[in-house]
Structures are given as C-alpha cells and as structure tokens.
Amino acid sequence: MPQKSYTLLHQDGEARRGVLHTLRGDVQTPLFMPVATGGAIKGGVAAMEVGNLGFELILANAYHLHVRPGEERIKKFGGLAQFMGWDGPILTDSGGYQAWSMAKTNHITEEGITFQSHVDGSPVNLTPEKVVDIQSALGIDVAMVLDECSDYPCSHEQAKLSMRRSMRWANRCRTRWKETGANESMLLFGIGQGSYFGDLRRESARILVDLDFPGYAIGGVVVDFSRTAEAVLPSIPHLPVDRPRYLMGVGTPPDLLNAVRMGIDMFDCVLPTRNGRHGRVFTTFGEVNLTAARWKNSDDPIDADNESAVSRSYSRGYMRHLFGIGESLGGRLATLHNLSFYGNLMKGMRRSIEEGTFAAFKADFEMKYAVGQ
Image (tube, rainbow, N blue to C red; front, side):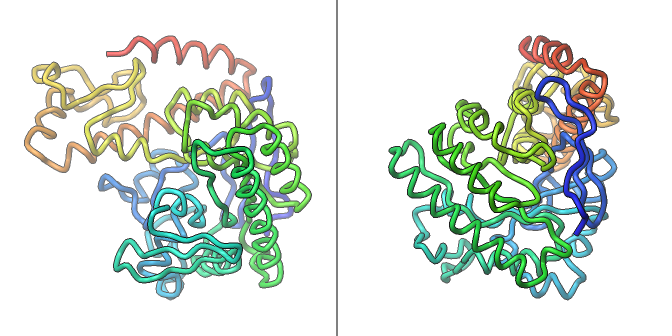
C-alpha cells in the first residue's frame, strides 16, 4: 500500500486540490467517478472511453459483482480492472447503499445484512468481514467498509443506533483488512453516518479518525440531496487534512461545486449516465431535455461550450430524432456528452483552485447554469 493515501497540493478557502495515491496509480482531485455498478458503465460506454475523457478512477459495486458473476470468477480473469478492460484504479462500494435502497427485501442485524438476491431471490449474506474479502478478491484499489444508511426521516435515536452500528462494522472491516494483509494493496475508507444530526455526524467522524483509515467518506446524503451541507459541515473539521474526503452519491454540477467549496475531494453519481440514457443532458446553460419537441428543427450543438467532439458535432435536432426512433445511439452520445461535461467541470475546479480563483469560477459557472434552456 502507498505510504500515504493523499497529498494536498493547493487550497483555496476550504476547496482542496490534491492527489489520491493508489497502488495502481495517482488520481488528481477533486475527482468524479463514473459509475460502473456491475462492471459496465451504462449507456453503452466502454471503460477505455471514459479513460479517454480524462477520468482516472471509476466506481463499481461489490454487492452486485458478488451476486454475479462472483468475485472468484473475476479473480480468475486477473481482477476487475482486467476483466472490464480498464487501465486504472477502481473503487468499490460495499453494499450499504443497497441495504437502504432494497430495504423491503433485506434484514439487518448486528452481524451484517441478509439480502434477497435481486437476480433469483436467494439469500445473500454480507458481513463486515465478508465485504473486505470480496473487495480484496476483486483486486480493486479503494474499498469501502460496510455501513448502514439511515432511513429518512428518522428520529435522533434511530439515527444514533444506526450510526453506532456502522462504526462497529467499520472497526470489524478494518480488523479484517489488516489481519488478511489486504492493507498491502488496497486502501480502505471509513464511512460516516448520522443522518442530518450534527452531533451524530461529529461523533461518527471522530470515531472513524480514531480508527485511522486511509480515507473518509460521508454517506447517507442520497436520501435528501438538499440537506447535504447538514451532513458535510459538522464532519469536515474532524477529518484529517492529509486524507481524502469522499461524498458518496452526489450529485448535480451545482452539488459538486458546493461540496468542493466545503472541502470534499471525491464524488460519484449515476446522474450523468442515467440522465443521458433518457435524453437529458447537462450543459453550460443548464439541463436540457433533448426529447422535447422544441429541438425538432434545431441545428444547435448539444453544448458548443463543452470541450468534447460529441458535444459540438451533434445537433439537438439529430439527437431528438435518435431518441424519437428509439435508436440506442442517442443514449450513448448523450451519456458521452454528460460524462465529458462532468470531467471538464472537475478539470476547471482543479485549475481554479491552483490559481486561487475557485470562488470566481464557481460564481461564473452558477450564473450561466441558472439561465436554463
């Protein structure tokens, strides 16, 4: 394992410009991870293509890969990166989010989580120890502990019980990571919980820091993005400067800018690919629904201001035609555009932090984005 997981290069206010260090290579931060849940990026985009867009780290999901094709099969192919044709580091989430999103079909105890497989209905048991073993077998670079995402809304007492169980699970994950030697090749991030209660977020952050993880995530905000700051701001003062900070499952371009302003380094979200598949694109002047009738005769490019051949070469009229006839190329091109837009946004943030102009960059982006189309 690298001697250190993160190097802070520049800081502009609370916004940070740094480098995440993994065994497979360095990754520039702030960063966004395209989501490849089951080992594939939805929208018909190959892993090598997102590499060409400038992304250096992608995210997959240990629960989904464990269910199929299974970590041992992937291991026989030389690990997940080789299996999916990706030449770079991979982060895997452990399954804690699925415990929340599939709550009706799972059961949580102190020991772990029992899922009803979304494939065949068979039981799938995940414990803190098992998720470390699964992620190690996948041969990935950054693993996440098993956690429990509080439902929303919930009481302070419910959030406290859930958070403290997540902290006990984090400790068990860390113990397994050390005793199996997985710490020699794979970073392990703790995940803070506590819903939107500031005292619980502070307690969670302090417990995780005492456990001395290579990185720290803030989880649970996917239940209500509008309250992200209530989870982030109480946590940040307790997180060490020399470790990466990851806000899980967030979000829209303004969400990313706001979180970087608060001191976050890493992000993932399905929005660029999910929206793209349904004809919704992110542009310099806000979100655009390419399936709308207003674009039928438009020869405007998807986004003339975005640095991507796809963004500039295909008209909105053509894109509407593709979606109108159900042609999969439409979703693929829109997804490529959205990923490029996110990648360029992160590049712009990194550059502005280096130059000490992040506040101006953020204000300019938000002014244009709010115009709408």
